[in-house]
Image (cartoon, rainbow, N blue to C red; front, side, top):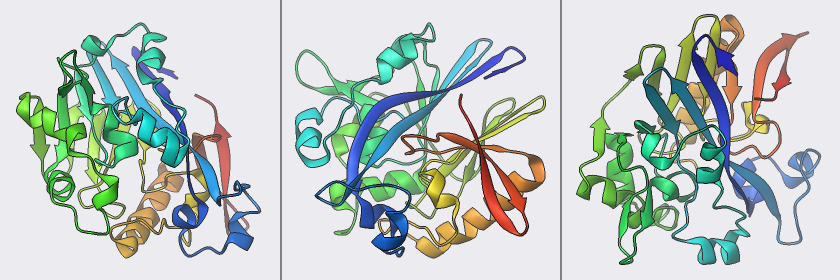
Length: 278
């Protein structure tokens, strides 16, 4: 999508499989199976999406995919088909060194693994060496000290090298990244979860991360069983849907493997999606 002199694109790090019950939360399988077919292990395919915003003099990447450090483990546990992000970025004429800002919606493994990579000595170092990584302080604190429920979703070598390398910027609350690009703190899926809003000219684009990981999560009753605070997720989803309807916002889903972007419409009191490919 081109908006004036700004380019906005979805870039993918691949796909992986996750337990369908965990993804759809309280919705019974008999309901969600009407939309997506699980495998014999009850897993469904999810996308690993990032947002690339190319502005004059500034390249912004939102989320970094699963990365390469845990490829073998993730292949076994999640049937990960990944390691695609840098090649996707290259299609848009960029390398890792061309990224100026990395915004992390959260620090869960599937969206923060690509924050760092292993160097020739086997040490984890920032993947995007010239970028400043924007992370909510609450998200950082949860990832660094997860409780028993969340411990399996964080890996310190994904995000610790950011602090060690001096590229980390912790923020508290809504933050302007560049003119027309800002974050909004939502909480919900994780403590300190944030979304990214791009508002340039007539274009309004919201990358919603795990607040609505797939198009099916537009349904207010569909909230992942893995969410840190599901009631907060519900409240923020209501606010976002109201904003999207009133302002014509394009929603970009962090984990959709098919419909990555959609406008929200209401017809006869029912919420519907107008899907968009970008």
